[in-house]
Length: 452
Image 1: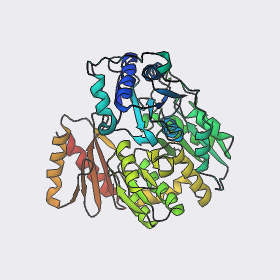
Image 2 (image 1 turned 90 degrees about the vertical axis):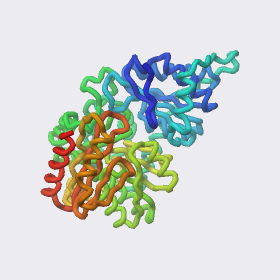
Image 3 (image 1 turned 180 degrees about the vertical axis):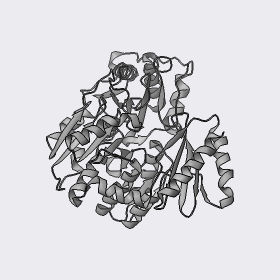
Image 4 (image 1 turned 60 degrees about the vertical axis):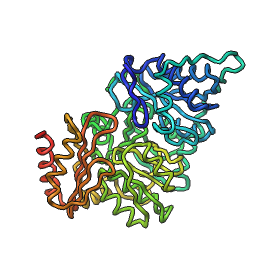
């Protein structure tokens, strides 16, 4: 069974689609296709990840490519070290929030630029599945050099730069790492910050005793939410396994939709960089656009997905980009996403304003109530989108096809798109200060999509 190469990464089942021999050949194929000199390699906490990272490492070394190992880390650490060391590429073994029997490889190129099918994956895939023999280098002298494990101190310094010179107030913060990779980074930051961290499911654990860390699933939120309430914390933070996404809870334990955080972070970034460009995804937009324009910035849309965002960020020299799925991108982080910089920006803003997160969110939710993402399993995503489009076309909406089907009316709008990574159709709806209208439109769209 062939491992599935996606639009901007690779993910598949263990061991049928992704295994040690495949990882070794992938590295050989990448060495042949990209001709790199040095590669950064890291991995998450999954049971199979260390062996897959070791196979990648051996494949590169045997192909004459030097390897800079990171070991157990988050995806953003691979991004950081790739740019910081000047390496030709960085590879992260992770399946992020996919089920336990999955794993995958995320990749960036020199300067932490996004790897796509056009600039990397198509060529690698062609070599991987060819009958080309890829022998190891002929001599020991030609073999790549395995460097010492990369030191995390420069990465931690970069995180702390985000709040340098800002008067952070003491806070009590629940941290829910979900037995993923975020815990050790919080431990390193802790000594430098005036926060009391309440740590739950903190240590990386390959057995995943509490299941896959994916706070987008409502059933995964209860532990963090209850811990916030029980401890009287000011807020809570949760991450997925490779912590390239972060999720927040207010002091009442209420989950904060990532959509509203995009607008909040954009506004704070624009105060320090007036006139800057902010990139957002087309699923939910009105709140982000309103806050960016209020802060004197320029808001520009981009299709969902980290490769698209990184490319658009660079093209626009955007100061920040945010997806409602909790990916937050920063110009001063090589235009990459970081699940650590995002929450640091939020606590810095709360420290400066003296407001509670709930207060900030309540104002924005009232202005632009939204449905949150609603998922549907459908036989034919395009047919479902066409059916919905035909049902609403007579109302003369503004139609946007940048990413899926977007339809905008005077007082409400929706986006319906197929997932890039899962067999799902995703619906998002928002209105202008009208929760009653929101409920009515969501109900109608649900019935329309479910009717086939």
